[in-house]
Length: 424
Ligand SMILES: *Cc1c(COP(=O)(O)O)cnc(C)c1O
Image (cartoon, rainbow, N blue to C red; front, side, top):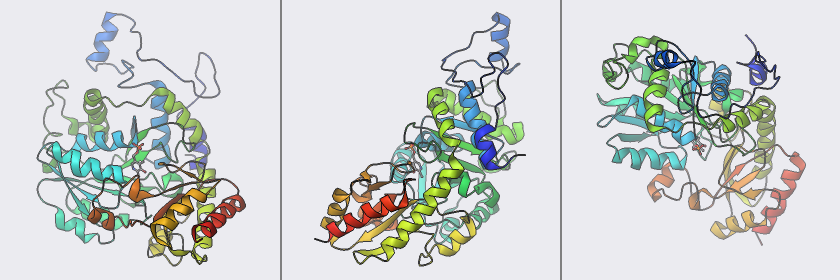
């Protein structure tokens, strides 16, 4: 068993027999040739394992899945085209029309839309609760509930979730606890060690790390017991679209096999092998980057807190943060690098600050090696109602930073000159 840093470089790959390629090859192929008709028949009948078609599996994508699973300490993973696709494929493997899901209200703005509006149109009701008060999750559970979904570090105000408290509530009620670990990554936090059953990633962010490749994954701990759970009748009945298999009978593989063989087969948001390959390259430096991201972010947060133009800084690694005790428990290695602050001088000062930055660019992304700034109320969270904005901790003067891995002196100098300019 290797440590995370070693797994990030090696997990799942031995130089392959034909070419001895030292770096994992990129299998940019949509399909695989069968030896003969009988071989093809066996693969389709599930009598034999093997590659059929890249929507379902690809050796490069398989390796990304194995690697992210190793980093999180799971039994396997499924890669999807984006973080959003990972959320959709995960929840639609678990829930159907008429079912309900309980989600944290402090999640990625796009995910609030997806769950609150598009899922609703499909007949799946999503209730929103506050991770600041785990009991609000318990209060929303009923017979139709199928899962609890949170982000380990919320978006965009970096509220740290008390994972163990919410995991207990989920498990007391026979529900899987799904944790989006995009902000922390396994380099800073391993949610399976705190009760998560499934982990979701937008690998678009820190996992790939360079802002190059869209991607998402769901990782399974293998610990949730689907067999015999009355909430999951469909998992426990023969599936007519898949050889009459009872997915729950597959034990710890139940979720991943259903997610791939049924949800991904039919909804189709597979990850491109090229993106999987690029993501793996980025992931080799994950631990180094997260250490530097967190170190730089803490220094920026401390600087902002001491600056007269700043009203408030919400960074969980600051002792002044209400999430400091939770970050001491869950984020001992660092509190990642996405957080918000409130600038003095209203919306105009906020705009002047963003427009005065030279090194930091205004970008609708995060978790890139480049430092970036954004204004959530007019971009990532612009579809939210005023009430949802308040619940998410966002106002017109909220500025979000995603601190990169550049030299800290250059980052601080840029932020300082822009803060000064903002107050003129
Ligand atoms: C960006 C993001 C998503 C969505 O991922 P995409 O790759 O953009 O589809 C989901 N969750 C979190 C926490 C994110 O930051």
